[in-house]
Every structure is written in structure tokens, then in C-alpha cells.
Amino acid sequence: MAKENNKRGKQMIVALVLIPAIFILVGGMVVMNYAMDRPLLSVPFLPVSEVEKSLETPETSEAKVNVTGIDSDATNRLKAANSEIEKLRNENVELTNEVKARQEEITDLIRERDRLVSELAAATTEEENSSDISSVYEEMSAKQAAAIMGELESPQVAELLKELSPKQQADILGRMNAQQAAVVTQLLQ
View 1 (cartoon, rainbow, N blue to C red):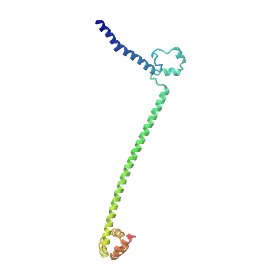
View 2: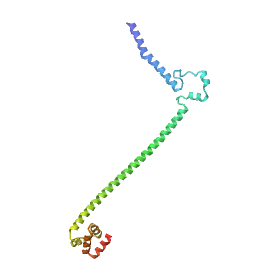
View 3: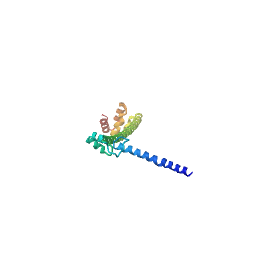
């Protein structure tokens, strides 16, 4: 039984320690070779063979020394990509600012529209009131209308008379004070 436990203990050591250690070593070799731009399954820290050294040019030997594994062409492409990203970010900021300016302009135009709509509604209401008052004066006799209009300001009288027919205008102006009738007549022209 002691032999079985001893055998089982060795199996556990192999299964839990040795096999993961082998995987870690092989994985480390592959990563190091990739980082040093060497064949993936070569030994990473051994010197390159004499045949490979004779084939290398000074530029490639410098590239082999590159620890990061990024060659100058990739570095240039990376710089170009970063400058393009920065350019696009700046363009994005400009467009965002333009959108904000347009939104403010739209808000101002909406306020202006609302103000004009309210002015139009007020003018329409005033016109309706003026028409209502004019209809009251149409129902009065010319003598009564002239007496009331004699107490009003001349511009108000002119506005009221514009709503009436020419015959009613003539009757009312004929019964008004001559001086006020002259001023109102000038305002009607």
C-alpha cells in the first residue's frame, strides 16, 4: 500500500507540476521568438547561426536587435495612423462645435417664430376687437358716433373710420368738429 501511495504521489507531481512547467516553457519560447522576430520554435537566447549572420545586412541586424519586435515600417505606419486619429479627433471637435452653434441658432429661430406667432395672434385679436367696435359704430346714428369720436384721439378715430363704409365716414365726419375732422381726414389718406 505504501508503494501505491508513493507511485500515486509521483503521478500527482508529474500531473500538477511538471506538465504545466513544460507548457509554460514552450509558451515562453514562442513568445520570445515572436518578440525577437525569429522562427517561433527556435531557441530564443541562442546566437543565430553563421549562415544566417552572413545573409543579414546591417539594417536587418539592427532590426534583430529591436527588442519590441516592431520594425521601422510598422513604427512609421503607427505614427501615420496616430496622426490620422489626431486629425479626425480635431475634426470631430470642430464638427461638434458647429453642431452646438447650429442648435443655438435653431433655438433662437424657434424663439423668434414663437414671438412672431404671439404678435400675430395679438394683432388678429386687436383686429377682431376693432371690427367689433366698428360694427357697433355702424349700428349707431352718425350724430351719436360723431359725439363719441369727438372725445377720442384723432389716430383712433381714423382707424375706426377705415372700417366703416364711405357713406358712414362722410356722415360722421360731417357731424364732427371741423378741426378734428380735418386732422382725421389727413390721417385717412
